[in-house]
Length: 638
Image 1 (cartoon, rainbow, N blue to C red):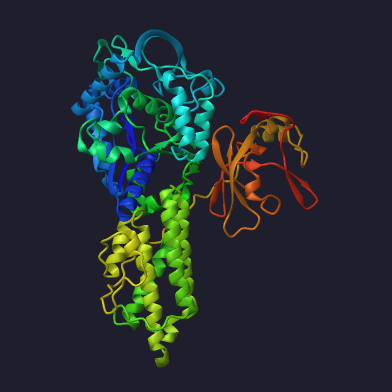
Image 2: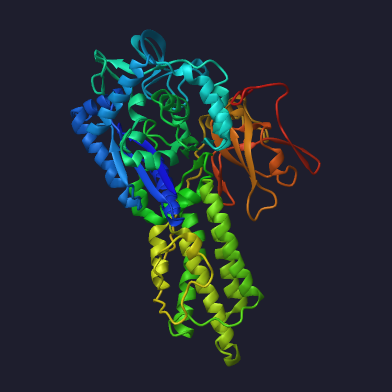
């Protein structure tokens, strides 16, 4: 079977950041996983290099647009090897073959009457480089760039997107996995419940010259989306190259939710107008937040992937990003969270299991894989756990629930560590009568490590390579074949273990005592001390209460009291709430609650909580606070 996986082509108006890295690591991981499953895989990424913002960025850098895009595109290309990302193709919208493909498609769609000339007035966001509807604004601002759009009136060419609205609605309804996760599918169906406007696809050369000229009117250049989206097929040699016929039917796009509408609405209707089949799947992920705000180059609160890799190591970064974020939802980044994952999951759990297992084999088995004897219940249980893990892992990786797949792997890591403690092989080695069973114990441990290494390879390729080399294994074949129990050959040599993950210490800066406020000083000077338990109106005004909708809920491991809630208010955020004894996770999605929206984030049981859900305490019972009647998500509570 074939798999074609793509990232968006990233806009080169700024350098690569963590958001770009996350999308591309997801694509690389999925490509590696599908290859491990035996698929013929093509993985494409690249850069989007036309438009207003490119010209502005080039001017700010005192460069020509061409010099600028060459420099920034190279930064993206050079960043990916540093994160063990290995695309099969890196495409640029300034590539000559891409430009020819775009112009050929424009001419075709124009000739068939699906492109027309007209005048339009609308709200234009320069950050998004597109017109926004009133419905998309949040308090009058673009939801992504937090600035009001400007009203523009202009003559341009338009694509008859509305012509294909009913077809697109039917296609989404008839193909439930066309847009995943489901919440984004529902969002697009809701958007399509109202009349679809036609798409402006040009900019006049009097305003912009850095773009692909329209083949039927050289006084206009192509609007970035009608240019950029075509990269997915121009990179395959559309329409007549063999790669297009081989890979396009299996196309899966990975994007962040800020470009959902262009990929879920613009792109399928463009393909329909061209007479091409739609892509197979669109996978939509959430944002990485810093201090409760989307991480974005335009907002200036970014983390650079190269710096992360240098500080923590490539595989630690890859593991953290896939393990920490529930695909489709937002997540929060902090160095402390990375260190916690490294020290707990990687150093303590996996690293320790690998190191002590191979060390004991070197000491008690002369560094050779032992011949296993008769398996006991405990050995069979660990082997069965490995088989169940592989099944769960494959299912969840295919469904883009990477964090769940990794949870399944780490459950086996935990069982293997427990298996060592319960068997105490260092004690068993002292008893000659236990020698045969000792071989069974070590064989079981080494086989478990081999299967774990197979599973972590798509996420942590360097770690997997080290583990397999230490086990003396050559990883060739499909996962289904390789994961069968008994792959290790007795008598083969085991290497001296290399440390997989060093523990990291990150000292927290001590915070100074809070300085007295101006109100405190004034009160003391006038002899008016604060009354205990009473706050001023100004102090209460600092607390921001909002209406929020719970969209997901799950239990927090090792806690009977805490639930991890994903809420929309209107941005998505994670809140840890002590309500597990009073509410089941499955009954919470869809419920509207009141949250404290500006509470300083705090880490509870390893999860960063970005606010507080209000609840009334009625004896021993907690009742979630809400509002009487309908109130829009994100509404302020006063």
